[in-house]
Length: 241
Ligand code: GLP
Image (cartoon, rainbow, N blue to C red; front, side, top):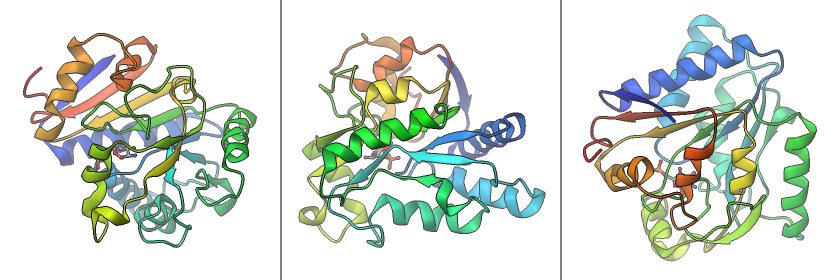
C-alpha cells in the first residue's frame, strides 16, 4: 500500500479529487467505484468545483456504489442513492443510466446481489474504487467476520456501525439493521483502490491496517494484498502509526 500523508481533511479531499480527475482524463470509459459516509463529502465538493471551473466531463463515466441500506427507497433522505444525488450526481454531467447503486428495496435481494456483481463484470470491472473505513475496519458494509471471498451480499449491521451512522437519522431506532454491500472479493477485483481516512476516530483502525495481521476480523486488512492501493490519510488519523 502506498501512503500519502496529508495535513487535514481538505488536503485529503483535494488529493483524492486529483486522483479521480486524472483517472477520468487517462481512461477512455472510466468505471468508478464510489463510496458514501462523511469522509468523501469534501472530495465530491472538489469534483463539482472542478467540473464547474475546468469542465471535466463525466459523460463517459460509469459508476458503481459500494452499498445501500435495506428498506430505504431511493427518495428517502437517508438512502445512499439520495446521498449520491445530492452530494454529486445532480451537480455533474454523468448520464443517469450510467449510475449504479445496489437496490435495498427489491423483492428478491439475493438476485439483486448476483445481478449487481454481473453488471460490474459486464462493464469490464472497476478502474478505481474509492473507500472509506469504519472504526472497526469495515469497508463498504463488510463487517468484521465477513469472508474475504464474498461477492455482493446482504449484511446485518454491527451495533457500533448503526450507532456511528445514527447521527444522520432522527434516532438510533431508525437506522436500518441490514444493508446490501459489494463483497470483499468484489472490492478486491478493482484495478486500483483509493482509501480516504480522516480524523482521530480512525487512529486505531489505521494502526491495525498498517501494523496488524491480515484477518477477516479486520476487513480492511485485506487491502495489504492488493497490488495498487493508495491510502490518503490526514495527520490526525495517523496519530498512532
Ligand atoms: C459507513 C459506510 C462506509 C464508510 C464508513 C465510514 O457505514 N457504509 O462505506 O466508509 O461507514 O463512514 P465515515 O466516512 O462517515 O466515517
